[in-house]
Image 1 (cartoon, rainbow, N blue to C red):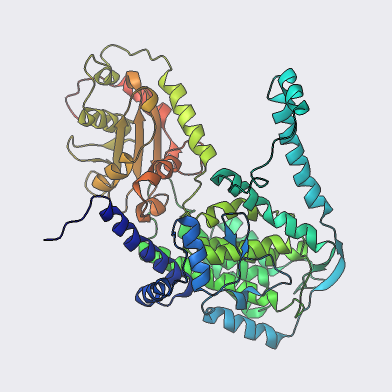
Image 2 (cartoon, rainbow, N blue to C red; image 1 turned 30 degrees about the vertical axis):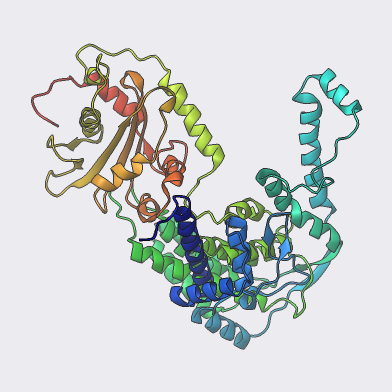
Length: 550
């Protein structure tokens, strides 16, 4: 009987897992199927074509090798798409086939007659480069003087300069390497120098009111979203060269995927199958918009399309939307290429491409609004609330949370259910994990998820995920509640079903669930309605003992 050392098993597990991840990345980009992608990964590994170490940087480089892409080293550790020497049309540069809708739109645009972009002066990169130089100067001033003791800063400035890591041929740490990668494109922009700026054509020259504006006015006045989409489809049928109408159809499909609509409680959001359909729709519309827009560019295009020129915005909006859709599809390599193209076209970056690049290059799956800043803000806010003095009225419902013995999780949840039922005018039978708004049998079921944590540990955690999946109605709203010391409700975030769509659909590793959960109970975001103050009032108004459950 053979034996295996304890350290060998983890190594084998890693070696099995990383090629699997690489195959899934390859399949997402090329749509060749997982089994075929896995075969290509295995063959390339056996042939010695892949990096020895398949960490994040190794996986990223291996994917570029498998896709036979040229790449540039954005930093000592990180590879990326090369800066374009000329514009490479995305219709041909992205892997996989374009949608039939994009092909049909391009064909109809050609039949309607070519519209060409016109040269309109020069674009000087100095404005962009100077803006970054000023930011770095401000940071250096703070580090050298404002953030330290002046005498210490002066003494340090007189010391001989210490050699940089590059002088010693030492690879930078991950944070420094990420900073180098973030600024790599600025060096390429400086090397390009002055380039001609162009203005995209207007499909309605001399027309005072555009069909798209009329459609927007209609939806704002009547709130008829379906009618708005129908009107947009009529616009592209009548004028197949209207890039902005295609882009707005893509925006609408992306909004449907993200669940950016609905009433306070009753809206039932899209299912997983519907979300996949909406992403497919968004991709098709954005591909059509980009294809039609690219048809107006010169065959060899080496210039800029600044956002300051209004006629350029529809095409730039389409390119940006294409990047967002590819990111949601997990096609990180393609999303990176599109974002880099957006920076090439409009280096002023009015749409925030450079802010998206770090998440895309780190292969972080899309979910709404997660940032380190917002996560830290929530933690600080909750800690402040946890230390807030609370005066408990004798005999009130809050006393069940403030006794000498810590309340059980069941007690905490039951207390919150009673208070939430009072606030929302709902009923609770005393047993179910949900309260019912409206008729007890046919009304809307609102699931209550409550956590009670103490002191510095008072923060959203991965157990919210487990609690939600254990008791939530599949298509119902959820109230996430965080109970602090002394029975104070720190957070009570009511979320509709459509706002929980991404939360329910995501498949995140446990280490990422804390930040993910934070978004959905953060009272300062657009997700949900914060009713913490109302529940706190109810805890003081309701008696601790009640003969009936409201």
